[in-house]
Image 1: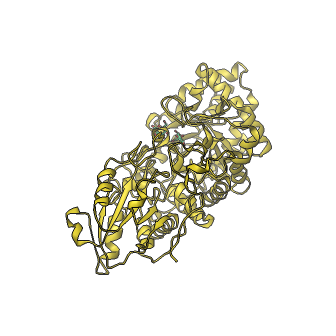
Image 2: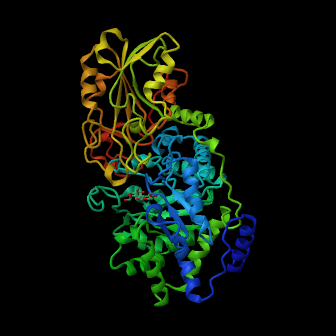
Image 3: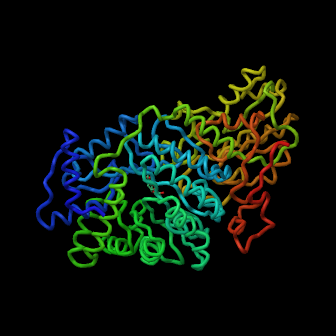
Length: 590
Ligand code: BGC
Ligand code: BGC
């Protein structure tokens, strides 16, 4: 633990070394000292917190919410934003983003498959390398902290955050989650195990507000919660040495996680020995009962160390001051939270000024493109193949459907904007499916067209179906059919056209979770699940043309109907009759 004096000492010296840094005297009176400590326990969103605000409220942290990028969305633009905060702060701010599949808010970044695809690949070494690559791209922009990975062990795929989860199986989540954290933190970026606890088991129909599943209530006994949902946190702490944990919006048996002293203080910090900092989720404490005062008292006393208060950061500091003065939050609790924030900053090299950003050249480097391509190839799951795959490189191909040439749909939510994008405008760096096909057939005497009037001239139809992008509760779905909630409206026409032709049909589905295909499957000669694969579709053609074999296996059970509350392979009350393809299923070429 660093002492107050050591901290000012270190700062004083780093300020002498880094010219231009304003040397500030330590606050003199007790009130100011308390305010500066409490300010370290609050995080604001960059849109609501200027670099001038730092002088009067030296907040511990600033975040970019989903899609909140600087007007100049380049490496230098990001660095400038962060440097502006540091200029005015005595203790450097720790800057956080959701880089959940690559540095997904940065223009031109490498977009890796979302976690569900990595769960299908189920390759720890691959995920560790993705952690490293993402960490480097994040670091290059001057950012220090990534709110990833999600450790949810999702049990009902109707949840809109299913694609952020590696698997319905706690073992896969634990192994891949820890590997990701190791990779990320090895290049000096703090990871976040989220969302604590049991966010993946909320019951359909209990979601908050208009949501069906998101931010809902988990109704399980403690033994099951520990066995399935706590397990990945154990690994994240013991094997990943994760620096931060984010609390879940959700509840356990009616108790909001943000007020749960038992789970946060007794279990996470006590039993599991977590020494890093616990952050609340986005305005999540506002869902606790009572006034802001009561909410802050409840969360801080439950063991939350930093409040993610994108908008009400000033009120949060002022209110916490009052609560401490009134004795509703003890000075020891504040001191503990403060030390935890300082430990993380110290480990990242923010206190002694040793944090070093990677070079801009890491962004979408050839090495990262190759890694993403490898990840895409390994994430694909072959679910049907009646002798049409692998394709011949000399084939004449008709490529149809909304996923044919669309990097936005291939990337899904948490890409460029919170809810994701439709189209290619924001992704000049991406290789779309169409481009990937063109690159292969163009050199081998084949052809690819998207013009359906040429149907009689082609050998085969590739049908690229896609979900529309979504994030969090917006993605909760009650109807998982191909025409159901959140599917792109263009799918239907393409499905009907493919059915009407006599040509063989290879279907590729781009989606954040399994969708219902029992009715359509008989009309397709091959079916490949591609998840939300991101910017490098060449990983798909590598496998479709047979340069690589399929190795991906289903990380989630594939349902027959939308009643998906009891299809998970770890559910003791599993309804086998609703399973179309089992967890772990996936075909290969002979
Ligand atoms: C999400 C978190 C995310 C945070 C900051 C919340 O709404 O639940 O996963 O880290 O926003 O963007
Ligand atoms: C932000 C996200 C955040 C969400 C929570 C959005 O406006 O961009 O980061 O998770 O709000 O509701």
